[in-house]
Length: 219
Image 1: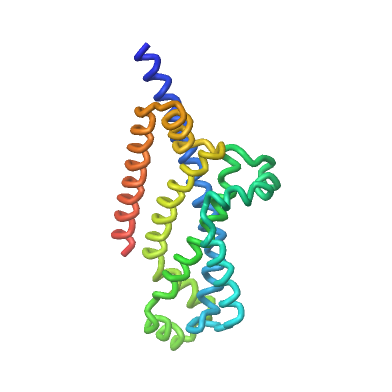
Image 2: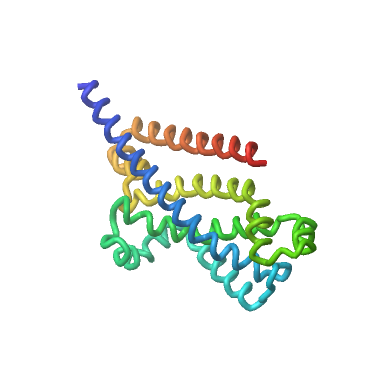
């Protein structure tokens, strides 16, 4: 009986782990791709940017701040109609990617903006003196110089999404959080709670170690 129980638990945990990896991976990919766009616009239109437009910068900055202010669990509920429109359903692992992505976009956009704007002004001026266009400066100076910092931001994003994915489990999103709630909390299975917690800790530490290694290599 103990062997069967252990086998069943292992199968359940592995399935949940795959669901968590699946949610976090795609939410990271989409939020990085989409979040890079407002980050570039904010960088270019900032008061010290290549093409300052105060109205655009202030408006977009306000929108980013508003979306960053929403607690994820509330955003998860508010986005149910939109999630259903995008993926055809509001519950499930794939459906959870939508609110995860939308919650992550303003987060990574602000991190990318900060990373881009920390570029050494001297390097930017040197590029200008060589006749580089704004587009060339953006790609060859801002982005190139910011890659290690942006990588650090992506690592922070992944770690945050792991935590958010656990919350998504409370509304049927699947993943490690779902197992911790359904088996660990509702069925009073302390072993599930401990295993799920340990897995999340190891997952986060592994991501951080990989991120630190890549940062050192790129720097």
